Length: 266
Image 1 (spheres, rainbow, N blue to C red):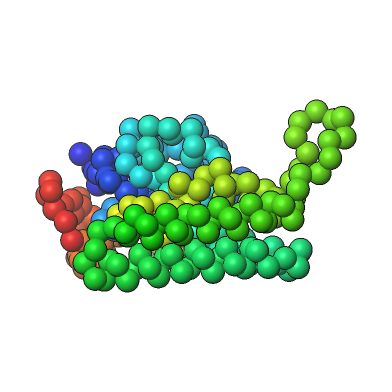
Image 2 (cartoon, rainbow, N blue to C red):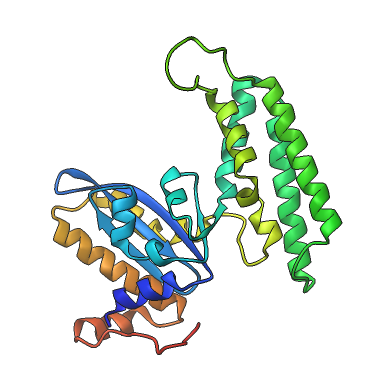
């Protein structure tokens, strides 16, 4: 089994994994780089597509039955054999922009509530707790729904015009509808302490790829891009296991890539 195969199989069996994607120019065309990762493994996959076909080809999500942490991209919902946790860093950024557009205070209050809940979870973890008291969690959930409903009253859907399809809700209405319909996934970090508040792990795992794009603008060929991503996947995984980059690169280029033993952990 190659290092890449091992990373994919380990992530597919993980309790929690992070997923993200970013566009990049390869051979003069838009491609997509998909990342799957956690605190132990990283897998980067190049594809000409962004959606389900590409995610299937990456080889993690089709058999993943843990908790998938990601942003609001709808295609992740097609993997309904998994549970989902939404990135609240994204929500905080979106909520911060709504008052500038609308002058409304409820998005700010909702952002403050998410931060308050995050702090409560971190304090409980630091104290050795494995969950919040049921009454406290219920209180947070009630306040959350109250603020969303207040926001929806201030941002009602526009009247129908007779055109086919639903009328556009606008940025505030769309965000509030998403936060309401997927509230279990938004708040999963509070109901399951194994779930992180945000998707920063995936963003860290893909950061060096974005830096390379910023410097060079992309890759001349798919083979070159795939080779770069293979090496970055390898280095990211080995770093998470506390290995020396120079040592594992030497081993890689002498035909003996470092592969952790079964059951190994950092």
